[in-house]
Image (tube, rainbow, N blue to C red; front, side, top):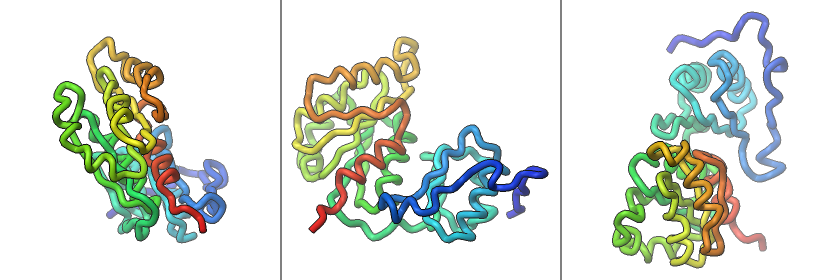
Length: 229
């Protein structure tokens, strides 16, 4: 693959200061948000990551970003649906409790997959349940055993955003709700499901920002972390 060059005169210190000790300080790796950065900037960061050997996630990566990362980290794992790259490619051996990611509809899969992969690369076992939205309640009810076995549950939904409250009423685990920008006009690109989730009458629901699969996966991994001795 052709190496993506840095832009003329662009040194890493001029564009980023990597948090290289985040894993030792917080227990979780650095993440690089690619949207809004040029491919060259992301490539410069990837080169530094490889030189330092630091576990890193690259989120919201477009095609050009992905090519830039892979030019410097050719073995990085790349998930097109989640628009996420991870290096090293293999997640750590899972510890702690299990995370379950629930997607209301197939259209919510990009955000749900991001949450799933983040939880895995932060060291948790994580599974995905797809297309169990409130339009057919029998679908989520048929998953009760799986829901009740999870330490933390991420529920991703657009449209009316009602699924997190339903799930929270069925389980003892905390529910992390993720509104997505999926829906017709009055969904207002995720604002309607966001407000529904914030107004959930079921206790135990926390809400992250619209389409923020990374934040939800990270929070779930922290909730499901091993209990210190």
